[in-house]
Image 1 (cartoon, one colour):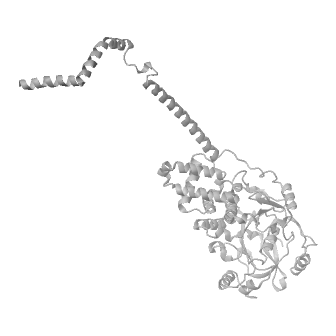
Image 2 (image 1 turned 120 degrees about the horizontal axis):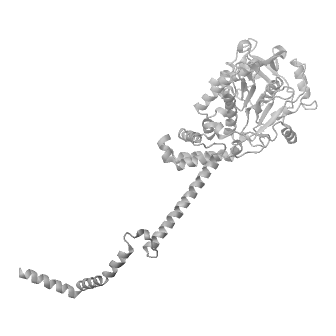
Image 3 (image 1 turned 90 degrees about the vertical axis):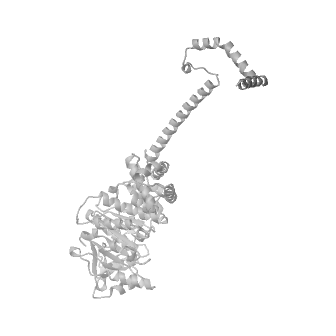
Length: 515
């Protein structure tokens, strides 16, 4: 299908080809459905279609299945005949097995090239979301980022932020006069949250060399778009880190890419699997930011596709921006399920041939209810569609195959070795060392001065600087007065004795008697 990504067959007997127009692919989309209904295969065939059209793709591999995009399917696989029959049923005449150009990424650096960013690039809003901070704690984090800029303290990795927070706690009284109250308890709470994500592996995520967005937007020698697969099976154990990582990628694309208006095809398509993790418990400021990105990133040529179980997992304001939709089956076992099913059906443009609500409930595995944007960006009539079979391998690849692909990648060696350059931690450590050296010298100087003072007072040391008169006069005066001084002391001593007191009483008595 020229100018479209082929999805499958719709209409009577699934004979009408259904596709997603590349011209409107940057209007975003939704892939929804219960577990086991075929969402992963739909994501896989969309990635294949975009790649074949020369559009790079970014997606997360939660279960490890999407690694099969790197390897062509084989006739000896279990589902080969089923795929051939399905291709014939939907008129997929040129169906053939083929692999996609793939680059593997991994936050932990184990199953792909290390994916890193710096603390500064993450920013206080996303970092507060990752740490689940209160309003007061987020305020202190904003102070840290402001001081980083003003004091020339680059925040590259976690230890930089931890060192700066320690410095803020030690200088809180001075900082409070300018930035407001800085609580030691709040600083301590942030440090504990940093310790938690450090134990979850965030140490590998924050640092350098940081990801260059251009490395996500490459094509191969044939002009096929690169499929960037983020290994997320281990990352899902830390859902906050997973959601923040993908949201950071989306935010970076929004900040860095230039405006392109409405191109003939997207510059990049971004799939956000397990999208509910992004919005569960998210503060309003974060949801507003996602909505802003969804509204505006379209004009930068980026399409964003949310993959989740229930459309209700996505806030309504964001859901309204998702024009291309693939809805797999929703099961209605409870009253709440029935309400969600009805709400999902009401968002589609009705098809007079069938009930949308019943179709969403009844479609089998590999089928979906689809609605794609048509001419002038208007929503298309809902269709019950049989999804086309994948051309790449269905399921994971071996560890040896993954290693070979990573080694042969054009990015091999670029991100593999972490770089720890001079930043906030080293600068503050140097300042502390200089201050400690200065304090030690001052203490040594004070001790030397005190020792000299003690020696002088104990008459073990003589310093001419303390003599206010000439030594000749002092010596002469002491020599002339020596006899008089001795006589005076003898008289005073005698007067203090018993005889002295009698003499004094006698003199005083005769004086008063005479009066």
